[in-house]
Image 1 (cartoon, rainbow, N blue to C red):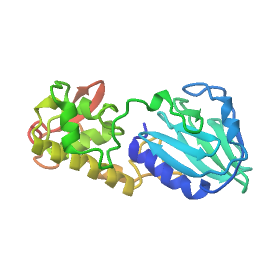
Image 2: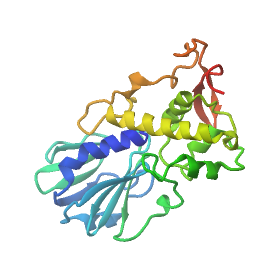
Image 3: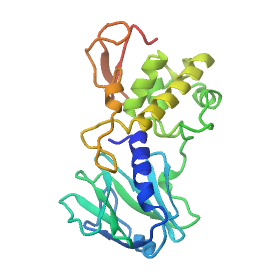
Image 4: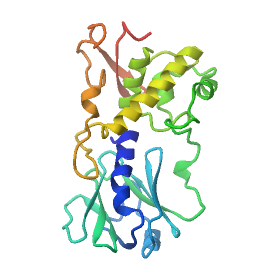
Length: 269
């Protein structure tokens, strides 16, 4: 599943091709992805794209007539192509531009979404979200207060969008390893120093992943079709049973909050 860095890389990749361009047509070849595709999207036709923004893992194509909300789901990807490029089997949505290009949404599993939001309105999917991890709003003092009296495992806590958005499974594993914090520790047990360290590592891991193009997953590649390169930097994710890069003890693996978790029992406390 594309995580926050992959979504941000997609935003950075498509923005130069879309911002300032006029939408000539919005077409879709199926009525439903994860949710039905709203026919209000046609209100974007004839509108100039003012910005491409992101909140958590949602992308927004903003115009004066409202915005398209895009979620990549499990296997979604965006491409900028010539408008006459023929669609494939899993190419479900096209945003056709007046300049002869189009933005194409490809999603074999159809777990993604294209939605519409009117100007000045919000959407239920965006309510009750925590701060963005790469902003000053996500800091040790604020997150420690949220964790007060929380016995939830720290890995599950930082993956909860109500506490901080976009810290998906891969980057939660990596951040906790770099901060030397065991993923099963109760969130309330972390000291102020540990929170400072963990927040710093989350920011650093996500920023590095974005800079290197997003993690290479079998279902993700960048807007230009090139894969991301952060996978070669992973320390523990996907390496259960292999030697820890610090102490050489075997990397442990177990389910935490129904997600595969990898960690070192020797280095993480």
